[in-house]
Amino acid sequence: MKILICPLNWGLGHATRCVPIIQKLMNQGHELVIAADGYPLQFLRQQFPTLKTIVFPGYKINYASGKSQILAMVKNMPNIISGIIKEHKILKKLLKQDKFDQIISDNRFGLWNKKVHSIYITHQLMIKMPDSLSFLEPIAWFIHRFIIKRYDECWIPDFEGTDNLSGDLSHKYPLPHHAKFIGMLSRFQHINEIIPSEEFDIVAVISGVEPQRTIFENQLLNRFADSEQKLLLVCGKPALEKTTKQVGNITCISHLNDNELAAILLGAKKIISRSGYSTIMDLKSLNCLYKAEFIPTPGQTEQEYLFKIHSQFN
Image: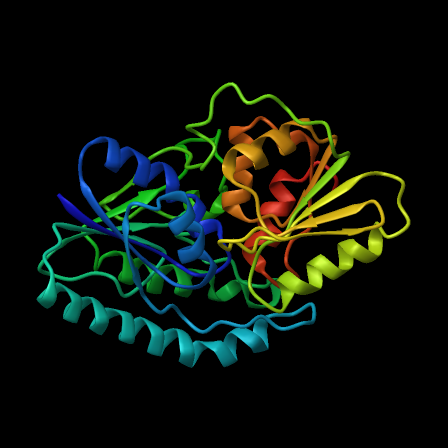
């Protein structure tokens, strides 16, 4: 089959968890095309340099710099809605120019079409709301369910039952009839026999939407400015050229490939990161969850919830 794979540009997580899916489909002999933008596109181009890629615009999202994201999300809503409409129209035009047998959308709401089999990937069937707005969660779930039903299948990257990673996000409400749990998705699943690197005491993995990504990076630089521990700051900025700078005992690097990052994470005494779901799956895959200090993006209710159920330090 010819398959179009489209991850959401909301940090790198949606792109990283597409890696094992892409690898499996390539091994099965399918023809794949990656459609994305920003850092996710750069990341997947590095992972799969032989695959055709399409610059496919995402939603223009900006987080607030403070602790609450409610107002920011309200302001972003017109951009999100217009982005959904726009991507649906772009897909329709693309399908007139080229033939695809299947579309795999990681959390992009508008990438379905009646003329092609479409699959929607999400771990968050239930949208977590701030405590003051928790009464709106059933409404948000209903709206999301309506979107999911536009697709032919819904894949949930988690495990069924109590031994799961997403908690209420995919287990609290009844699933759509075409939804199924597909197990954990991690870019590290294919890696074997990695020798741990003990070069750094602490590894901090930076990711997320601006300006919170930069704020998080600066917070960690300030926190460990006078530390005697060796810290590696992986800045989550994939590019063709890897950049490195040294600030005292802190090494800042733009990005690492999967093997390098896995070795560093396995050898570190402590890992600091956002409590994003893809990060949790990656650390679970490496059996490193126990040494993770999660710092959720302020006001990002999904990450705050995942922090509560996974953090060893809260």
